[in-house]
Length: 336
Ligand code: AHM
Ligand code: MG
Image (tube, rainbow, N blue to C red; front, side, top):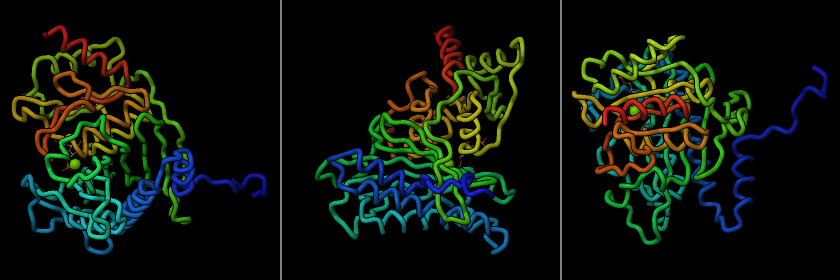
């Protein structure tokens, strides 16, 4: 390899965060430290997922989480790794995790910590034992000064997020990160360097693409406008392709790169939908909007404006290319 072909000026996530911090004169460095802790949790979760079948981490832990899902061993480990990272950062007041019914106080090192984090440590864990991609979804809020970090104070819409994103532990580990009103940046984990490298700067998603992604096994329970919408995609002059992995992070990552639409609508069986507002819907919605797409709930409201009624509250969701989501809105309008 000729010397001129080697990139000696690599933008790592660490460097990226430092550069971001210097752009903000008022920055205290607290947010940067929090991001370093997030980074460590992603690296360590990725590490255990890669090794899971080798060190007997497959299968169930024998416990049930707050919603009644059987917890996988890795769900428990991912959750514990994430909590430890947040606590050790000294920058997080409280954490909401899909795996814990109650808020997790994280301010033992620093009672004045101002950030609140919402996360799904391992989303798509039903796919884990088959080696299918899973990931971590996260959102970061800045609490008001003097906030005690109560449940009530965390019932915030996505418009209050200061940062959000997700990782995907797939053929390679990917990280997608965005800040409030900022661009979306994609990083790839270089396992030899042990660093996330900026590989997808300023991601912008295609305006349209004929791919749809939803669990059509639920169509018996769907409402009329959703049925009509999916049927219209199949009857299009050039019918759409169906792609559904069943891991939101993987379906969302593909949709972000290739375009198309991902949907998990509210239906007759699950009137509030399946996915959680604080740590699944709102962070994804912020990413998609910042990449030029749209994200709405089953009432056709902007997803980021939806205020959860409880910390584990759910919502229907449609997210994807601008034009593809617009089609959903038009059909719902017709039905009034
Ligand atoms: P989980 O947080 O328990 O893993 O569930 C969330 C997952 C999403 O990743 C995915 O989009 C959805 O559930 C798939 O649900 P279904 O199996 O009903 O299609
Ligand atoms: Mg989940």
